[in-house]
Amino acid sequence: MTEQEQSAAVNKRIVGAAPAGARDEAAASVAVRDMFTSIAPRYDLLNHVLSMNIDRVWWNRTARVFSDILRQPQAQVLDLCCGTGDMTFALHRRMNRGQLFGADFSHAMLVRAEQKSGERKIRWIEADALNLPFAADQFQLVTSAFGFRNLANYDRGLAEIHRVLAPGGEIGILDFGEPKGLIGKIYRVYFKRVLPAIGTMISGVSGPYAYLPASVLRFPAPEEMLQRMRDVGYVDVSWTPYTFGIAGLYRGRKAGARGQGSAKHHSASSDSRSFVGLKASSG
Image: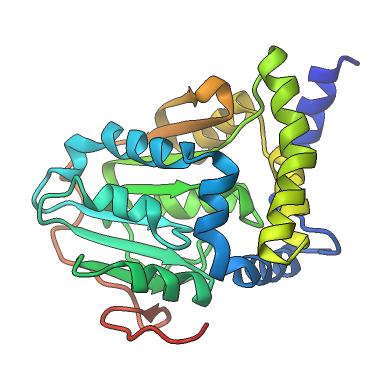
């Protein structure tokens, strides 16, 4: 069996993220949340340092892809696994009076996002991506930047996003990939050895930066991920590599014409914790 065939076989068995010591989906979710909570205070600095600020380019490029949706005055947009909000802010810069939600299950990350919000009108929601507190057919766009890979069940995550998308609505998942060739070899040395060492040194926490390379290796290859999207019901699926394939954008659409969703305004259910107007406090 070739290396590519072995990788494909592994991908078929993958359910979702599996941090060390997690024996089931519930334990995986808790472990991921704890890891990101532990690095929340230095998360932004680490992202920019470790990516050499290319992460800003990726966020803005992704937001630009969805400009037509974002400019719609009544657009309902959700940034899922939003962390401290950088992807959310990139979307906000291109919006035209629509409503923007940022959702994450880490309280500490959302506190940091709210601190950075300034006068921006964004609703921050503490919620589980596998059980979203939103009505069906609500959003014209759902994005997730470098967070979807950490879900405990990828297929359930795709299905839940599909549920809350309005007919004709689009999904955009920005996440890490595995570049090929010489660039890939150089990148893997950096990603597996240099990045964990720097991340641990700056954050003072080793777990998350040992987990990161392993989570990328575990994530389904583009062809497998696109098939999973089709299996859930997305159409017009595609993957666009960014920066030699170090990252890439998965896109898809919920079948139906735009505007067929409910015209009723929806808000987050009482099962979620809303951060609208929250005064920043310790996480």
